[in-house]
Image 1 (spheres, protein in one colour):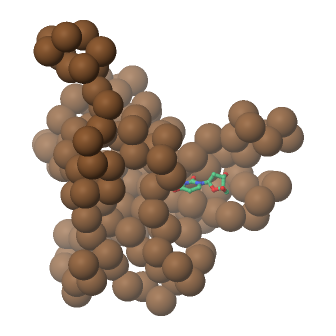
Image 2 (cartoon, helix red, strand yellow):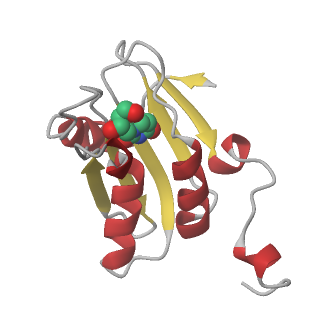
Length: 140
Ligand code: THU
């Protein structure tokens, strides 16, 4: 769904853009920034960091959620994702899984280089997710 950007959406998108500008994407040159918001209103932002052993590179979204979890956060509301691409920057499958397990059914703001915003809930991007409930026989 395409929507007009409100002030609070633009603040989160700006935090993601500022992170994108610091991206360490030496090999792909595909710069990504993510800004994850906690229920208490704090923002954790991160950018993708690439390795010369390509597969060891890491996406901005996973670094953002791991940083927040490491800081002791556990409740999240939204994440904004920004790249330089004309297409909307959607989270990769691995990030969808990790975000769902650690941040829950948050709102995902995806932007394109024209400044349009598309927003989806994480469960729409990752239906029927495998979770610890399945793994642990109904326990969380
Ligand atoms: N990347 C992200 O950081 N997030 C995404 O949502 C998609 C891909 C990074 C990984 C890699 O450093 C580069 O973009 C190209 O795939």
